[in-house]
Image (cartoon, rainbow, N blue to C red):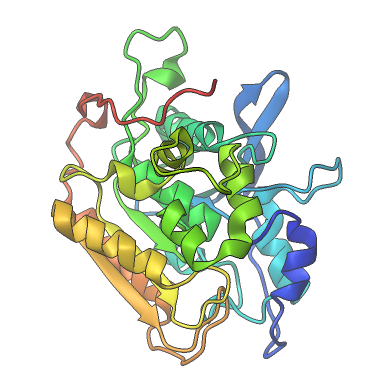
Length: 336
């Protein structure tokens, strides 16, 4: 997971320059999917050569945090920047953006910006990602996809957000004046690579992540006694607190040599999904760090994820009306 000043940490995470990298460009740029007090929430659209009619929301990781300057890198373009500037020699073996195997499989990919900390806590970050899903559903025909099938995918903090889209509420409001808000916010399947899923366990494993946790939650966990409300805040910001049997299937990817987010985070997610009976798969990559692959695999990890996603597409009933999914009450509490 990248830390608070992700500009500097991106350089620290650079490991090597093994091979040249090439990236794909979006077919539609800067689509406004929501507004925040006059500031636009943007996404780029990547359309495949042979579309299959299904979409994937891609969320890049930043440690939940932005630098806070006018010239910040847009989140939706950060993966391109990492590749083009050789910060990562590969992305789990991919020399393009991690979602390229999904694009090649026919999925339409939507790479989004969302609000970040420390200004915006986890509730607003999740809400932006949910809004993106709703917007895509409402405009599905414009992008040549079926409104009943949109998955989510993310890396690092983006994997946390992507997981929330599969285990969190369907926040559709059937009586909303805004037609976008009437759409389901639930992703039909999730690909989560190297995400944080239990904040308290992550902090215990890596105390140096305290500033990132504070940025996400707005609360600094220091010497508070057991039972202090701050522990509930950290639980509310953890994906594992929301998992139940009705949740979407999850494909988990993690390197066993990840110095930024320990593999135990994905194993905690795996165990919680298992207990709830949610379909899932954990792919552990020997020797892989937070981004770069160690031992090469065939197929590569994100190619395997694309194949798994295709299987989910075949298994799920496209005729199911996602807007009829039950509205639950497990959303994070509102900001004070």
